[in-house]
Amino acid sequence: MARGSGNSAGVFVTGLTVIALAVIGFFAFQASAAQDRAEKHTPSAPESSPSSKDSSSGKAEDSKALPADSGRGTRVVYALGRERVWLVGKGNKVQRTYRVVPSTVSPSPGTYKVTSRSSQITGSDGVPIENVVRFADVDGVTIGFSAAVDGSMPNQDPGRKTGGIREKRADGEAMWVFATIGRPVVVVR
Image 1 (cartoon, rainbow, N blue to C red):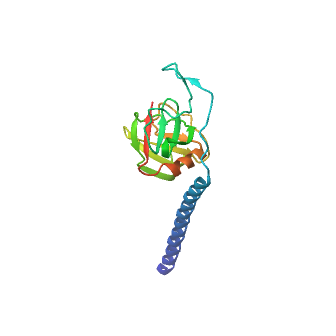
Image 2: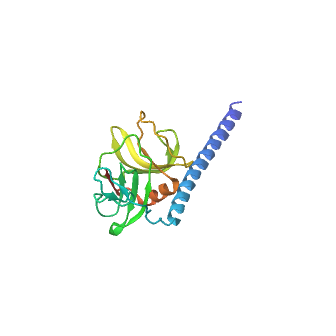
Image 3: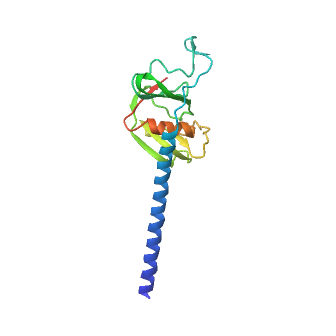
């Protein structure tokens, strides 16, 4: 009898091992596919729109124009009040700009660096997310950019502390390729 139960335990462990390896392989394939899609994607030209009034100064300002106080060099720029991100390459050239849904916890204006990345996890709001690029920590809440796997954009609950700055999936893929570990992230008002 003992011999028969040992064989079924071995078969069970082997089965679990095969399943675990399949799951790991699946996630590795997804991460690789996201990277391949992002590399094939040509960054869009900076968006353009009519000018709008800047309520603080009364001056006409293009809401999609790179903020003047956003530093120099290759960097990610995140404007809190405009809820917009710019991916800025060499020569201060904007490679891509897009709107985001801010997190309920925001970093203070300043310069940060990308500290970690995850190809796919579950967000603090319980939504499966991908292309996660983290750059700050505020009162124990990790702040970073991400895109929901299902393409949804959140309706933030201000009573809940979350650090996910949500992007559309295509924007998340562009961020993933651009914002490698150590890349500066400049946060402006």
